[in-house]
Image (cartoon, rainbow, N blue to C red; front, side):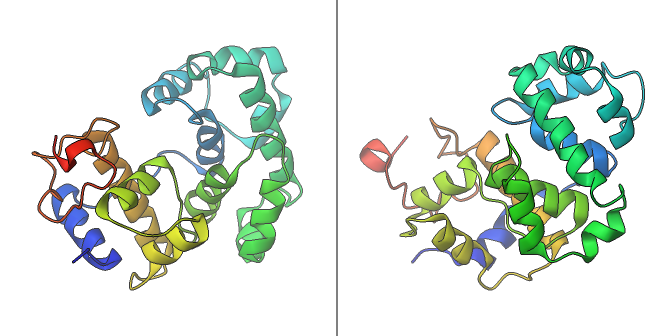
Length: 216
């Protein structure tokens, strides 16, 4: 029988422990959520080390685009990401750069506003809402979809996947943030494109659906 979401969460928490959280202040969280698109977190760390000061929305908006592009060069897609970062900061400016005003706004309205911005997809929008503004939104990504499929999940849409992952799990930003980190960590260590099933802490309960011979 397939694990429940709560059982999966508990297993991963036992295996990896709680997350340390997304590093940096709110503005850094928003900027790095854009930087990490289609690249490894190690590249984001390198890019952050190139900035001469702590990130603020005002600083990022005042930077000439070419200069911002140079700072984030390790992340790739520099122009698109630099433009998106400044677009997100301008969105934040609509709330007077006041996190309390953002947090007081309805979650779905904020999500639709972010999704309307060029360069912001669902994963990035949800990560910004969850980590920067503590909204209880579950972040779906490629690791999450892949794991659920291999475990034997039957969900075929993101709405169904989100419903499965959130069922029976406390709907708080802290739990969702921990869960997201745990799924990322598991995906990076074990449930890769070529998975390490023999070492995986879920190896005894995974259906290994989609894997040739269901053995690796």
